[in-house]
Image 1 (tube, protein in one colour):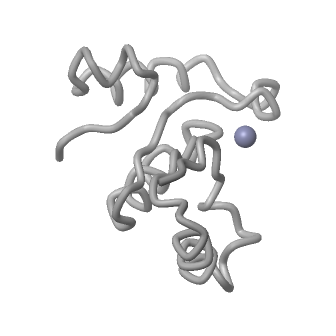
Image 2 (image 1 turned 135 degrees about the vertical axis):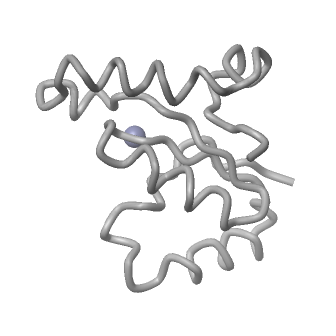
Length: 99
Ligand SMILES: [Zn+2]
């Protein structure tokens, strides 16, 4: 069993073959996926996508490529989104929750 630890599966580049990408990965024994958000604008999308794919978890944060575009309130949004997570999830750095 392998884990893809950094997969931006929400990116538009995957719009036409997102499910096929996951299926091909599974065929290669990649069964767990960490989907990182890149900014507050895609926190909910990444969370929803992770919940729709067995073996996927998400992590919330601001990607280095998007720091210049981030707003101060994005940090408050991040804090609010993480506030519902249990301690173990935060320590691992994943945004996974049980909802
Ligand atoms: Zn990245």
